Amino acid sequence: MNDTRLKLMEAIARKRTVTARYNGNVMRLAPHLMFERHGALFVSAFNLDKNWRSDDERRLGHFKLDGLAQTELVDEGFDPLPAFEPVAPKDEDTLVLSI
Image (cartoon, rainbow, N blue to C red):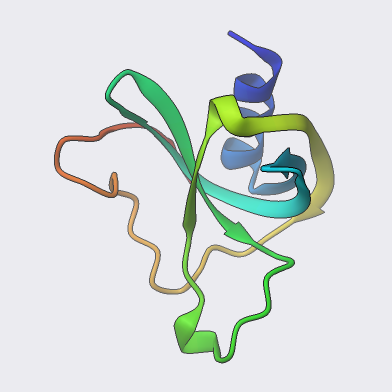
């Protein structure tokens, strides 16, 4: 297992935030679940730095693990989004881990 995968699995299990570089941007993420799609791993996470127009608009983004770099576990907890359901985003996805 690579370091990014281990850190994200720990973050999901312990409900801890992570910082990571994705597409050149550093983000603070609250990972809710990890899933596999077409042989690649993804994490569904709430981007804590994104500005949302309303609380109703807040949702999880899906990030391919191969695209995440410099991932660091932060000792900051988070509460799951109220509408969160611990299921893979699509029927053909395989759930790996969820909070």
